Length: 182
Image (cartoon, rainbow, N blue to C red; front, side, top):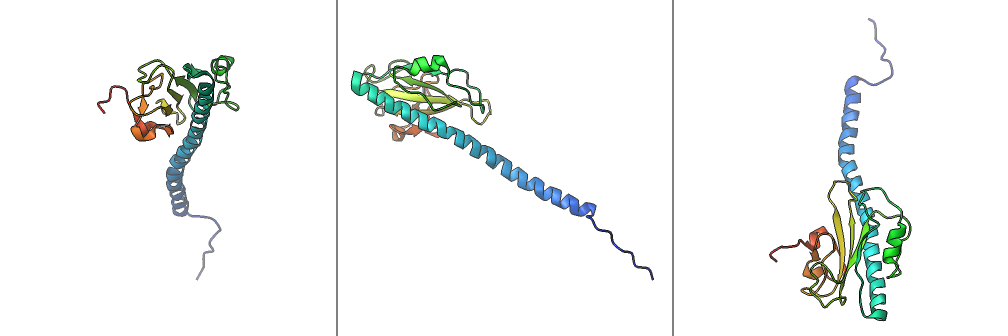
């Protein structure tokens, strides 16, 4: 009787099982990781719109007016950071605000144009525009200083936050699209 000795190694079935397990784990982990990355990029917008509002409040306390600034640095480009441009520096020099380092988002303020319902320069909305998940859709983060029914919409899309989200950062689920019946 001859006994066959088994050589070391894996069978094809064993290798296929391991590969399928790795594939299932990757299918679960990769989308979660991408969502986490986008959420961490969005933290920049929340921090910066709050800082813009704070410097806008300081400007208002000195000059009794808020300022309107067009979106800068310009060119929403997704998941790549870009340097704060000299044009952006010049635009925000009135407020005295500059972000730290490169940015994912474009920033703007509105205090007097595009449907403001408060007296001119007495309320302000700071907005960040970006595509940090690279899906081709521009997302907006707003911080509206005002009260419901008396505020300025963002410059690009004309959005306002829902009533519960005034005086705090608001994202896509908290924004009222322009022309909405509510």
